[in-house]
Image (cartoon, rainbow, N blue to C red; front, top):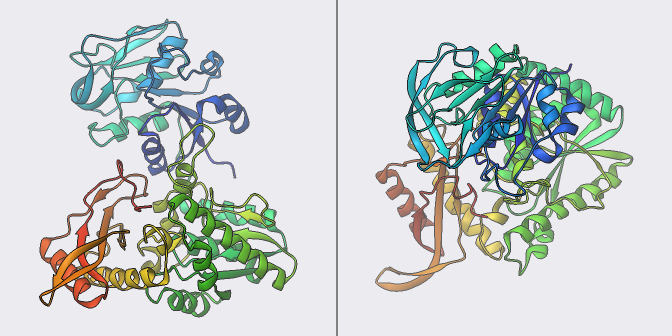
Length: 509
């Protein structure tokens, strides 16, 4: 089944992923596409709607991101946001100038009606973030919204189904912004919202069977949410032709290996092989401090283990991974920066022998959880805090050693145990401890100590693309700190990270 599709054309805006989230929340499938590849992708997928993102450039700058004029004659509804609105104006014969007064932040806006603003209050607050603005409309367009300093806050050409917004409806600061996006999807594009968990499962089972056939297949199982859902989904498609390989690389949380083995053997009745490879991974990481190199080493070593195990099983052609959309986005594209190379994307070796099966590649984390629940995976597994494939390898900052991993395992276990005791486990999206490559002076028992510092992180999020620190009560933090310092040998200081994403990432490496 081909789902209704909206393409989000990326001009380098900071809110691109948030636009995608808003569209997905409306149960409409979408993809983010670099502007240089837009026309090829449009011809390939024939989308029902197109959204132009914002961007940091001025449309009047030499070499600024551009788009082919023919896109506006395809009959496909288009919504331009910020830079996308200005580009629409310029390409179609309007003009964009730099006014004396810029607009940033919350701004009062007045709407003039129309499909895009159906059931939206005539006056409320929007989020502006622009230096340029439209000063001359293209032919056939009318103004549909304005602010005190921006006479063209929105414009439309109803006959051609072209719409443009100077403000950002995707951010929470724009009152009723989500309704505006929904109006574009359902009133302008006339979509039905057919991208649901059950339809996704049915489609993926069919596609997996087409791809894999009766071939033996391995699944890279970490025990985290993504790989667990991928494993159950592929098992639903091909049954006992799937063998899960759980690599214990010595970089897991406390008791993680035993828990994963028990859950998947006993509760899911899957073929499972546990490979104990602690010494192998730690030896490869010896002396390595650069986080990107650590990720790539771990990613390659995973693949080498899978290749070796596949030879033992005989005639294995496919490898299942729990790759999700944020992994792909953050690992970079031809047009986007690499934030960090995820071991399952940017860390894959070029000479890999196995063909990949990635059934969750187009989903965000919350969508993965919904699919997992639909598949009947228990809630306690689905709502576990995310744990990265490289594990403690990127939570031990600097060189990774067995001693440091042991210290971090114990500190992390205490941290998570106390959060559960305080009833905060489900309120926090992800919580973990880190071990910075830093020692500090302390005093314990009237004696000087020079020991490691532990960093604590707790984030609220829906998909991992953005996040805010969770305000853990001071008394809970105090209990956690006291227990870690008293119970974990080699630690004399505990700190709490209060930085959001952005500007930071969730993991420290």
